Length: 281
Image (cartoon, rainbow, N blue to C red; front, side, top):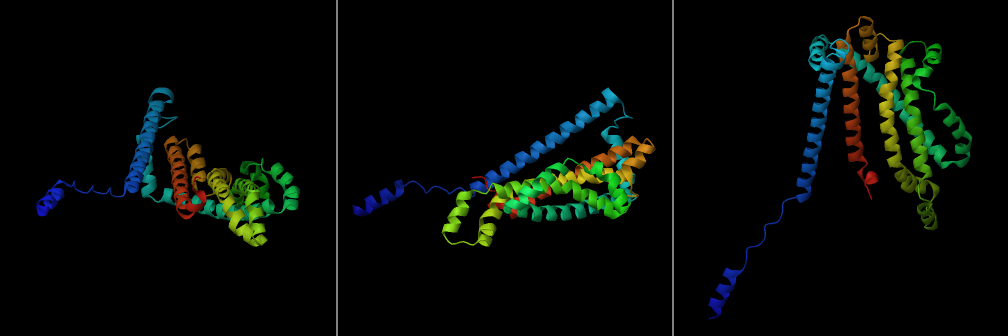
């Protein structure tokens, strides 16, 4: 009898529920696919608007349609002309951005941490930051000529203030309660800076570096328009003199494409390497 009841109980026991397999991973992939679909739809809409403006509003000479720009892009790419100009512009952006970002990062950390230095230097900083790289071109040409150093310095100038101001703001906005708690626990000034101030300033620094990346691409074009024999700015100038609007749009699209890709790579790198500091609380 006991055996029968045991078998009956066993037969009526519902099967164990199958555990869900990695719901977070599935949700993450859904978000990524949705984001990719949104970006694709956005670019598709942009192409439609571009085509409509070319055919209906301004005409194919003033605004070449996408297919005309693509026809101009193919021979420019096959000949190596476009690759050479892109490489030269990217190298100038890279040197100016890295040097300007590192210099601004160091100075910003010092100004944010040393009150006397901040009070003395901040008025001059706020005074100079309204000078755009384009406004600096005449004096930079006198100082450095028309060589590569002049172009590096203009990108340096365009990068400097975004990173500098953001870094100072990040250091100054570090919660004092955390610093006081660390002092009470016997932490040194170096430990407070390394373990509290710097991590608190990281989100501000990242925002400044991202803004400076766009400024670096914006800064290099006027420099190459004025004094250069290569680069995307030089390509724009030469195409404008010959009224080759299709080649002009090739250069414009390349600038936007490279900047967009660089910005996405920057976001991916910072989200991966600095995730613990950028987490939303």
